[in-house]
Length: 270
Length: 270
Image (cartoon, each protein chain N blue to C red):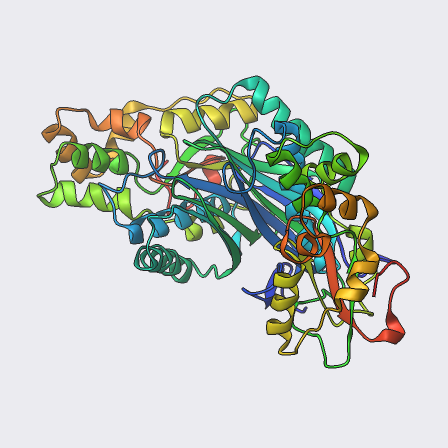
């Protein structure tokens, strides 16, 4: 395979006991679950959103390792009340995310259940996967993508505040997050450690610190400078602070990395 | 990698955003779900059984493709009432199956949910995966492992008939099935098509027939000859027929394959 140190291709997709891939090199492999009433609420997003978002969340773990997506399998647990039309909507959202990320769905499983849940497993390839545990004392923290918007979007939806550009931007961030594959791809060779921000910046920075056995210091002043103006406006309208959403609100799927200042990528907020 | 046409090794297990594997050659990949009230009922099996059985069921898909297991990820959705002790039991059953099958659990995901469910994704390696769709007119059908026992075991449990060697054997088949990896490994180069019998022999033979666009004929006389005496005795005590359990009862995880008579493996019932 000239010119490709890692690679993977799909030989058999949906319809057999298992999918068949051909691969060489390092594979990065994750599974992520989205459960109704825990990860999503049908009052606040469509089934297209549910499918789209659950797929992006799974692939975000590949982005955080600096991997390129290879393929995904989707296990769906569907309640009896779930109609064919509902299923079509859910699959449409998954397919949209799958196309946008270049990560084909090559198989999966359907089962009945009392509650709706989606379990997505994704494989990626990476020459040098970036782990959580490599950060060193003296490293900078780099942030790729926005934080706080998704949490502000959910807060706006709960309070019925859906009008205006700031709320609309936050609600879109909540319903339609994006796995930051291109940012992640810049990390190998630069970052010592990385993860995706799914629980909120404070919690996830703590995960990185513990895995790397370092102390992480986030400057509120520096963080405040990179927050979206829409977040600042939405937070003000909701009587909340933008830093609160950024630090303690999750599900933006930004990437947080640690590395030496000299290697900071251009696309990062340091 | 001298002397290994396919191979895989694990570089990073539990604790990061994703597991990291090194692989070369063909990979076979599956996901399988076990949902409380659909696939299992806490009245009829322990949580150790639930963990064991769900893991075997997932790996059975690899066996049916003639693959060797590489690793698995486990996504668990746990209700609030689920205690740490419950979790320990479930994980113990998974670990037992994982060890028995040589398929390490290298990561996964935990989430809250209203109902208990287990979603297992497994990767295997196979030089020449055996698909459902290759059967040809004139092929024999080969059966590896017992059919009907698990369904008879469940029927016995529902009727409270748990005493006696025949029922005990059937109940054990229901609670503790085994993915037939060694039988599956004999299939590449011999079988034209294969699958695992999870829905009952009649239904799964139909799946093979449709995928291969052939007609499948199962001789009741030949099938009756390979049924376990324990199944025959249990069926009689339950006023049911052993052939009924074998044809229409599922979850034994036997393997069904089609291939030319000259290549029939010694371990198959033809």
